[in-house]
Image 1 (cartoon, rainbow, N blue to C red):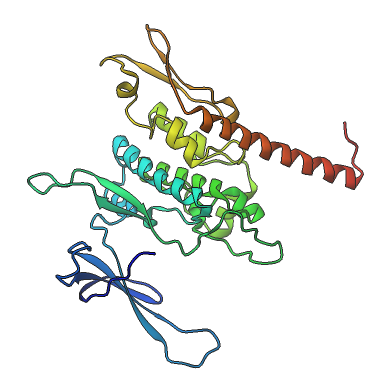
Image 2 (cartoon, one colour):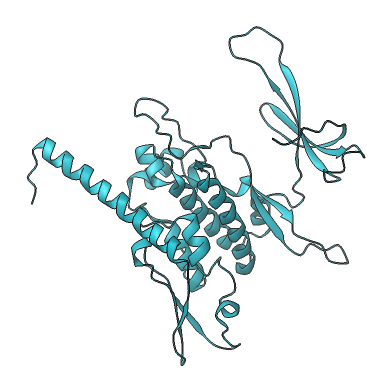
Length: 332
């Protein structure tokens, strides 16, 4: 168990307010050497339900994100962020999602406003070199194995523009929902516009949950970016890639292809990604005028993803078969 260290901190200017909390800049006491020189202090109130007692005030020291949020970056660049910058942001988000999902949780509210930017390092003239993205606001999160009863909690978790089709239609919130939301965020970072055009809430949810529509992916985006989006914005959850698959197997986030395979400068690389989990054999790159280059991947990860997809598909087919038999429908 981590040791709890007590100390003092000085409250600075207010940088945000919510329903029950106010966030201010905070300067920790000089003897708190384990903390950064500037943090965010959250002052919030809490009262126990059905108990007539005064509200209790709490102070919580949090990491301060001087880069703001991904939403701020999008607002400052309405035509869309540079693709190489989006690749870095996406890789960072996927690492966070992989960690969350591997611990059997679903965030349920991935959106630009919940993605905080922390500077990676500084140059000699104090100009920011890059940002690391960290996922915030787990207020809507749930256990991935927690089933929501049909007659129970029917509220929508998350933000309508980023919510997955299965969440709207069937009240399902699993890791695949976070991947759909990530696709919406990546599309918004690349174009500067939300994945779904602004309309009434009911009309938007109707399109997302009860139609065959998909967000429009502009042809002006690079082939690799379009391919990445096509793996995340998939209505069929069996074909939607997991955070782990994207992080390990898709070149949009897996790093510099030329550096990994040792291709010389000026060589054109055509990427042909697998269509789904069962189609992954290796990352196959056709080098124009050259021999094919194959990138080795972890066989254990590949086998796991294949078995996972096969198991879920078989389970889905079994349930459908049982339903048809019990309802008296003919089975061909």
